[in-house]
Structure formats: C-alpha cells, structure tokens
Length: 323
Image (cartoon, rainbow, N blue to C red):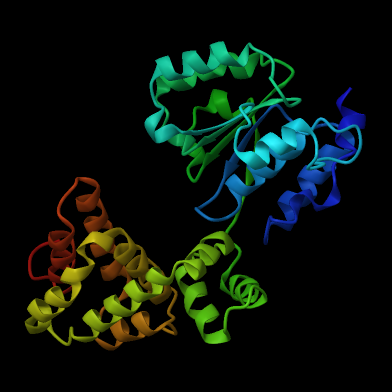
C-alpha cells in the first residue's frame, strides 16, 4: 500500500536539509522502496538537521494529494502552513517526562488522523524521558497503528533504553565541519570573514551557524566577551575582566557556548578565531578552559546567578582556588 504512495514524494522535499547528503540518500531510498519505518531515532548535536528532517517528512507524509507530495494545496498542507494542523505533535521531552504523559499519548495515538494520512510525533530531547516513560512508550512502539510515525531526537542515543532503540531506525547526523559550514554561510550571503568567525562558533553545525547569522545580538555578545578576555593579562586583571563581563550576566549561556567553541579550537591546536587567539596569547590552554566551562555550566544549571558563574570561571582559569 505504501510503496506507490511514497514514490510520489516531491524530489525537493529535502531541499531545506543542508549538509546531510547521506541522510537524504537513505530516506529517499526508503521512500522509493516503501520501506519507511514507523519509528526513528535521529541523533546528533544541535543544529545538524534532526528537527528539520522530521518536519519535512511529517509534511510529506500527511499530504493527501494523489500526485506529488507535499502539494501545498490540500487541506492538510494548508492547515500545516496555517499552523492549525493537529496530526503532527512536537513534544519537548524535558517537560514531558512522566509516565502519565506517555499514557495520554498512547491513548491519543489510537485515534486515526483527522486531516492528514498519518499521525506524527516528534519527541525532542528524547533522552530526558524517564525509564517509566520509556517503558510506557515501548508498548506503543511494539504494536503501533499503521498511521503512526515517531521521531525521537537526541544528542545522546546511548541514553535511550536498548529496547527502544531496537524498535527504531537510527540515523546519525554528524556535524558538517567548519569549511562546509563556512561555504553554506557564504552561499547564504555572509561575508567571508564573518562566515569564518561564525563557522568557528558553530560546532560544525550548518543549522546552528545559520541561527547565529540571523541573530545580530550573538556576535555582539562575542565581541563583548572578547573585549573582556583581552583585559585578562594576569590574575590581577580578574576584577576588570569580571566588571566587563557583568553586562553579559543575562547571556551567560551564550558566553559559555562561545567559550566552549574557543576551548575546542585550542584543544585542536588552532587559534584562528579572535577569542581563541586572545586566550592562547594569555597562556590559557584548551583543556583548562574546557574544565572551567564545564564547571560553570553546571553552576548555571543549578540556577547560580550569571555574574557569579562568570566570575568563578575567571578565577578557575588562573587556579585562584581549586577548580
């Protein structure tokens, strides 16, 4: 039944998926042969295309056209464009961890789709589900209705129960690498120097790089952090650097992400980006910086105030106290 259906997918379904040609090839082959699964694990770091891919497939799977899909004209396509489509649910597992949530999902999945061909569940941060929630979900994955499709998105597939993974098709979304990211940014209109800087901050992710490129405030945060760390010639400069970082206390997560990217660059023996170069010139190596960033991230996750998190990180960089 599905084979003829899948062969009618439009070739451009995957046009929005950047830098993951192997994923595109696998899914196009499954579509062409009618072997699309009922459950997938998409694993990879942020911005590598997991959510984009799940949404693209959900769009095509639910189009009711008898011709190429998605057609953009049928009731399901129009509802999807208007944001009123109810046969696709996107779930943040970080706030959907309880067994009762999964039991409710299991009850809902028994009702056929209202408008589209399938009911699609996109579960982001799937590793955040509790074992009890996993076990409840497992019962649905073992005997799913023919119209149900599940996408479990996670950077940590090993955190999913083996029994869950065994019932899913696992596809890995690797980071694309800085040169490919830079190329995609330049293709989208970014100047070469800006593209190179953003690529160094992207963790090899085209999606994350494009997000940064659209966020004018992100690079302002980078410049402010760079100015602060340039003040840091020795441990005696910590008060000045801390004062310069103070306005960034509400952007602590961004600062830590920027520093993590710099630490990664230094650990690879590189220091092309301005911040990595400034830190390297001050004798701060990648391993020490990464250790300080990890500790600071844990403090932030424990709801410690942003200014204290950043100040502690500065002290740790110079081993003022045992880190």
